[in-house]
Image (cartoon, helix red, strand yellow):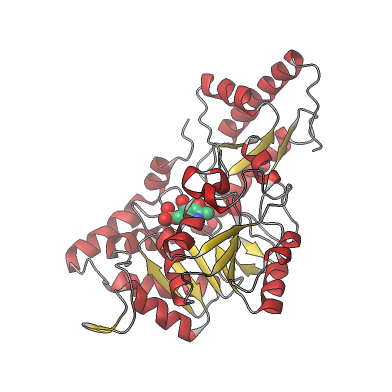
Length: 379
Ligand SMILES: Cc1ncc(COP(=O)(O)O)c(C=O)c1O
């Protein structure tokens, strides 16, 4: 079994993908070819924003977003430590300081109620992460930001296609950033990403920063980066868009199979909680477990791949440890020891999801018997 089955996905879209790749090989415009603008227009329409700017990766999108806002040395940016390292990395690369705010234990997204007490005169922006595919509490976060004159960048690397109160992820705040890393819900076959905004000035700054701060050929009006997404990768995303809505439904089908079999069984297994006012694209289907390591080993033995997203919160990473106490953000620390992501994807069959659930339930049962004081988590 694959953790994320990209081979079946390719087979399902093979002709579309091959056709799109061949078209690029035929016209030969490998950098900023026509597929770049075509994809940007399609994605802007899909999310409902005025501007989409494709970039070299999700990390580059975060970096360019912060650069367009003018974030730099001495500034603080509030974010979550329970995310992929890139979220904080972009802040640090600009000489600014990430200020970590703990997560909601149910959704594992940043807890809005803890944000305001961390705002200082130096705070410039908030970067919530829509973790595992489910949007963060964006309205609450936007309201706080508005009260304090801060920018909000949604790190939607895992949530492209999800909705929140009827709007698409990437269109939930001033700037949205996503990633087309191959295993993401909408992935390319290399590195890629995109920025989303309805602010014309920010969009034009981002477009310049993406190409070395260039406003006209060889006129560099600001400091930028080499941050373009190449034409071939844009072509691949265009092909994959054709099946994307169906694939999201298939992810939700697989998640529903897991939900039905795993939750409410008094087995000490809960999933990361969902909110009714939003949908998830299940970049990951993540469960919260006592005795995580033993259960992960049991799945591994049965040939079922799993992953931990993420085993160490960022404030405990060696390169970031100077940013605060290791005892800060206790919920993030606790969740890092309990979360486990199961195989997920549009091509995960119902039978495979059932097999994963059966092995996990059996392993949880064995773990429970071997540890009588083991209490079931509230489910
Ligand atoms: C939450 C989050 N932010 C940022 C990134 C960075 O994206 P990329 O790998 O495309 O640079 C990722 C992807 O790995 C991610 O999961």
